Image (cartoon, rainbow, N blue to C red; front, side, top):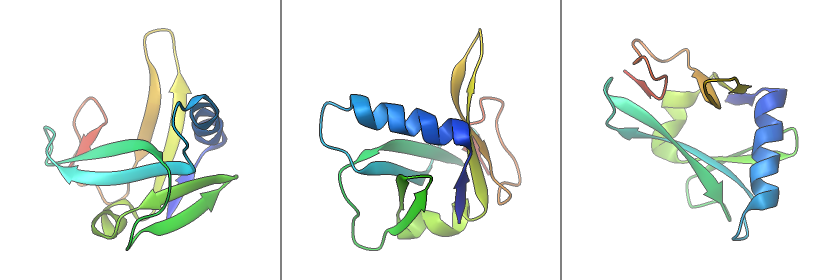
Length: 106
């Protein structure tokens, strides 16, 4: 369903180790909004919710709600570090359009 690159796995593991509240994994979801129609939402999550797909990638649990599963199927998530910016990058084969920030798609 979703693939995390090694860089993304390392970034998530670092975030989990620094979490102030107990967290078991990372939630990836899609919500209406953003400049292209949908936007990616991510956050640390303590446990799976009803209807979630739970995916283990390199020792990291990903939680994807039922409404988002079809929209992120086949997506690769990377984490890039640069002088000007760092963050997660989404390569989603389901996106027909995306905004310049890379966090929104249509």
